Length: 324
Image 1 (cartoon, rainbow, N blue to C red):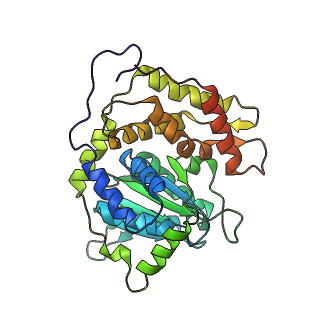
Image 2: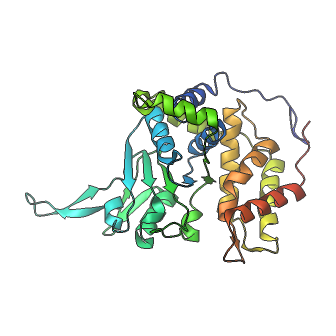
Image 3: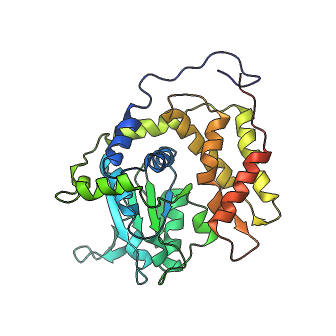
């Protein structure tokens, strides 16, 4: 199958989704009834994006992040965000070495392959800003010295609704660093019953073992990056983003960074589907998770549902390239 204007046959690499399937199964053993959300998080992780999980307490946001960390392997650190958390509590700080009399950098918990920022909107805006450089550039600068973060570096942040007591809304620049925003929602009856029964005597998370080492996961990321994108599909993604900027309710539409994130996430989806080429359907499938939280509407009381409606409108009015 090819796009209009593209010739030749393209085939998926054998076993392209084997590692992804094992990771997904491992996480699903902990989080029941949320296959779509699990696949979306896995897609964003393979695209080297960052994920914001926003929902009410107690629906499994942190468990989902921990399950991915356990399944992927590598180094994992968790940051419990609180109002008194300082930027140096995240990035690290320079300490005086009593033996040498010199300053020595003590890395903070952000120096890990997977960082779980739990309840990120309970941290103060100053502390939230400490993650900006980390998420955007994969590095930390302390006392004028830049320290590279491990690769891969992935942030899985959880957030309670901003109208709950003791929370600070994430600024626009911070939200823009997250590739996707998801809500888990309450499980259905059967899934909730299965959760209760499974955790009466044991904790399923304790049984999760790494199904891919760091090298295998790195290879999956590189394979996702290598997915070929025809210009027509890239142009389709750009037109969707531009459509959000032209909507009358929007003050700031999807940024160029959001467009780039959409294409990268779509490439990761194509890889998980076993293809080495990008389809317009990949872009369409990820737009509702990638774009809405990037929009800023004129109405200060607007909610995420309003942004989702605008993205849906942009998708409806943007014609996808024809597949042959």
